Length: 115
Length: 112
View (tube, rainbow over the protein chains, first blue to last red):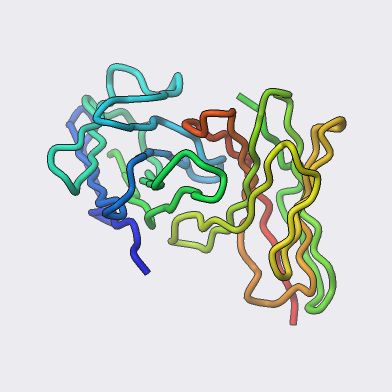
């Protein structure tokens, strides 16, 4: 069964540095998402992306964050000037349509540790 | 942002019995609700969903009930199996399905 893959599984970065989290969504999917889960807290929506543009974003997704689909297969999340509070699990998800019987498929996440 | 709440952080059930996981929401505009299961070190996996026009959806051992007047949904697992032990998240979205709001999760432990 096709799956969403995320790399790396664990990223350690010095505070203030930029980090890029990578995701390869399921190939025929059209909608892409990033979520994060701070340790012990709920899964939080960050951004959704469709037709090469952001369709929704949360209040968390400020100018520090950006997303890109640089080619036909990758979907990236860039975090600039990382802060300690950016430490979390970041999940990428994709779906093939905004329809009830086509739910999101999640990757296994990237654990981001900011030192 | 507490639009979706799961007030029970954990639940322990004997194998073979029913597990009932609860979820409350505040936004009456939510149009679609989902349950996800999450094992450690893995991403959430879709389990079952329900549209706001229904009050029940069943898929094998899993049934989701929606009470719109109470803004409450629940997931029933019957019979519960040890492999069901995981964290269960409920989530809700508006009509456009572009943004999902997750609850904080309930950790289910099914004892053999």
